[in-house]
Length: 292
Image (tube, rainbow, N blue to C red; front, side):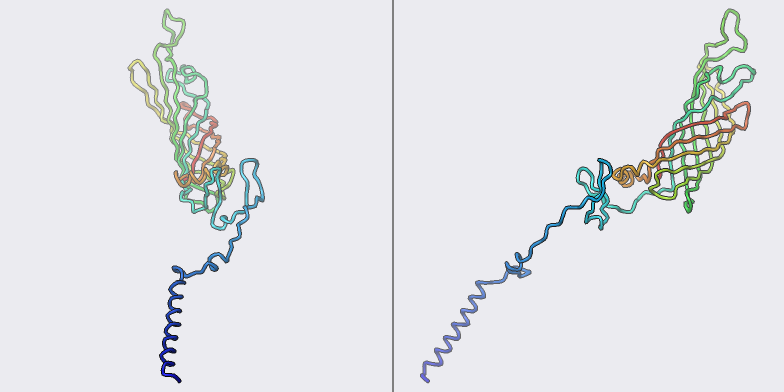
C-alpha cells in the first residue's frame, strides 16, 4: 500500500462527513411540531352537512337537527344569535298579581235612614285596582301558599239634604263628596300547576278582607273614616305567556328574574259581615301575574 493511501482515505472520509452535515443544515426541520408539507396537506376535512329540518311550526319557526343541540343549543333567533339552555336563575315560590275589575256598588245607608251610596255616587259598577302578593312554600303537589292583597276604588257625587230646603226643587246639595275604599285581604291560595311549562293553571283562593272606607267633602267639614270586615272566595285561570316565545322567556329569566309570565282572569265572591256597610257581590277581574 502506498504511503499516500491512508491520508487520502482520511481526507475522503472527512469530506463525506462534511457533505452530510451541510445537507442536514440546508434541510433543517420545521418549527415545532416539526411537520412536513406532506403531513400538513395530506389530510382533508370533510364539510359538515347543513342541519336537516325535521318539522316546522307554522311560518314563524322550524325545528332542525343541529350538532349544537348536544351542547345545550335550544334556539337560533332571526338575527343568528345562539341560545343555550342553562339553569334558570329565577325562583318560582313568589307571585305578584296586578288586576283590574268591576264590582257592584256597595249597599250603604246613612244614619238618616234615607241617603244611600247609590243615591249619592250613582249605581254604576266601580272599577277596582288590585294587587296580590303570594308566597307558595308548599309545591309537592301543585302550589299552596299565603296570599296578601290590597285594592282601591273611588267615586264622587253630590251631597243630599234630608229634606228639600224651601225655595229649592231638589235635595241635591252643593257640597261634593269623594268616597274611597281600600280592601285589604289575607288568605290562602292553591294553584293546580304541576309543570314549569304548563300552559293553563287554574287556582282557588279564600280568606278575610277588611274594607277601610274614607268619605271626604270639599266644604272643609270633617272627613269620615269607617271600616267593615268581609270574607271572600275566588277562582281563576292563568294562561302561561312565557311558553309562547322561548327567546322572551330566556330574557325575562336572565335579565329580570321572572320565572313565568301569566295572563290571569278571576271571579271573586265577597260576603260582608255587616248589613250596614255591605260590599257583598261578585267581582270579575283580569290582569298580569309573574312568578319569581
